[in-house]
Image (cartoon, rainbow over the protein chains, first blue to last red):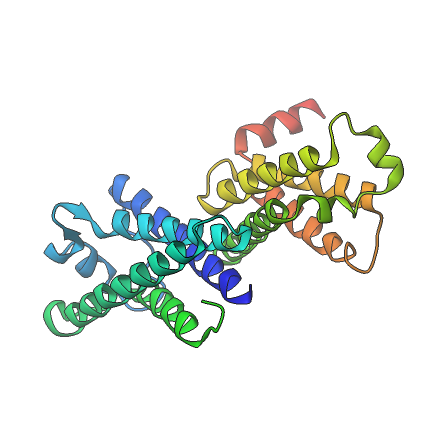
Length: 136
Length: 125
């Protein structure tokens, strides 16, 4: 139960963050960069989209799906085993993608984006929770 | 209130409302147990349905707070909801914490009231 609550909380934080980024992008405004000044460089780079889909939208979709699955697991909506498998695969893939984006910021773009790093840490934390949790 | 503090509070309350909604969906009858017998008699629908309605309301409030849309309205409904919760369940070891949540959600409402509404309230004085 605690692990599901943590996953749900982290996914909600992710939803809130990606909604903010999407709003700023639609309004053609730069997001506030609380730490460092590389947000503009990273968010306007060619790596900010995967197959023409902005990364913030992909992130939002992932977080919404994770939040729904965590809620389904708490409410015990069947098929439980399928939900568990699905959430593990999703967080696993998202962790790898986050790793690639972090590498790109470090080695290719040479700039750090606060929001991108926050999202990456959120996903990795979810991965750690899944690994450490006996409930999943 | 600084913008950062406001957003931290907003997201924190959003998660609280969302999670409570999910937990009520899991065991609506158990959550119905917090309602005082006198309030139970006033319900026009069975307790389970009333609690399901509460869960839906909690989730709607949570979503609006989370996506930063109609925050003042969500916080207003959330405040009224919490006042009703405190009234029908009484202040117990568990519900005493709702006083803090109520104070926080009122702070969010006050902070996010639209300028147009504030001017209307001032003009009405």
